[in-house]
Each structure stands twice: as C-alpha cells, then as structure tokens.
Image (cartoon, rainbow, N blue to C red):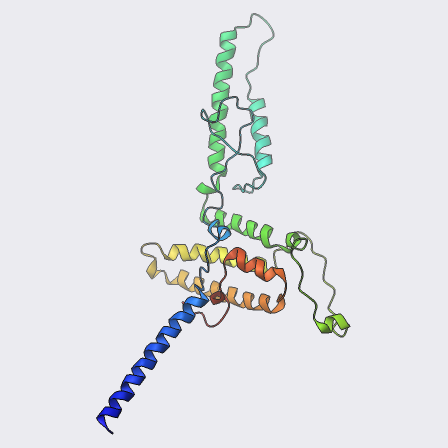
Length: 273
C-alpha cells in the first residue's frame, strides 16, 4: 500500500477511537452514578437518621441553658423501639414517684425541704440526660440505624400513606373496554412493606451504608461487601425497571425518583462495579 494512504487510515482510526471514548464518557455521565445517584435531602438524611433532637423535660423548671434541652415531637425516631410520647410519660412518672416525702408531723424545716427538692431536681435532670443519650440513634449501632431507616422508608413510600396523595396509573384502553379483567386485590393488613417503591427505598438505604463503608480507609480489600453492594445494586435495578414498566404515567415513579435521587444509570443499561 501507499505509505501516505496507510498513514491517513491510521489517523482516521485513531480519531474514531478517540471520538468513541469521548461519546462513551458523555453517555456515562448522562446516565449518572448507578450506586449513589443524585444527592437529595431525603437521601442524605440516611446518614443522620436520629438527628440531634432529644426529649423535652416538661418537669424541669430550669432554663434550657441550665440543663439538657429536649424536643418533644412524634416524628422523632428513637432507639429500642421507643415512642417519644411513651418515653416522656415514663420520665414524668419517675419524677413524680421519686419526689421526696414531706412529713406532716412535727416542725417542717424549709431549708431542708429546699435542699431535698434541689437534689431531687438535679438527679432527675441527670437521669433525663442519660436517657436521652441511651435512646438517641446517634449513639446506636449501624443495625439500629438501618432499622430506623427502613421504618422511614415504609412511612414515606408505603401505599397505605401515598394512595391518598399520589395519582394512580392511568388505565389502558383494554382495561377501559373491559376486555382485560384485573384480579381483585387482597385487602392490605397493616402498613405496606412489600410494594416495589418501598423495597427500592430500603435497598437504597442499604446501598448507601455499604458505599460509605467501602470508601473508608482499608476497605478496598473487603471483597464480601463489594459483592453485597453489587447484588443490592442489581436487585434495585430489576425492581426499578419493573416499577417503571408498571407505573408509567403515574406519580409514583416521579415521586420515587425525585425523592431518592435515582438517575437513569440506576435502572437503564448494564451496571458494572
């Protein structure tokens, strides 16, 4: 062959390979990260599920600067399967039961009574602070934090809560004509824990925990968690593809993708980690 023509062929081949690499990178960036997706407030809240909120001591007469300030709200998630209102009632009852008994016989010493009341109040504040640290998820294990995240996913994406807010999928022409008869659904007993959106949210919480652990120093040799992460990502991809096929045209898909920050790379194409 002509050396000049051979050089032109090699140059065109190199330009084509370089262009293919650029297009491959652009397509990969457009799909997004298949593991983490797009950061969202709900997704980042998985890392700090308990927050900094603690219980409010309603029996204390001191200012918030003097003792432990504890907020009381039903949306606070506590450890050990505790409810904030139940824990608050137990704290108030313990304060009542531990009050010093004032004798009705004999001469009452006001100084001694004030000392006993002050000691009782100080001990109650220390006990309340200790309980707030015990039930706080900030001091809990990763297993307890994952359990709390699963509970939040069920409350946020469960159909027992979203059916009254999100629009259902539009019926197809066959369903409207009556040629396709859908089977009757079994009435739901309790919260929704098995729908596709709930399972996708739970898998996303577990994937984020594993991804954070693998980014730590010395975690590159953890082959077991690498395999677990790969399995969870592919399982989520199958559920996302199924949900998108079944719920096309409804608000469930859009709400799930926007809340969890799921990009096209989490369900489209081949995922290699």
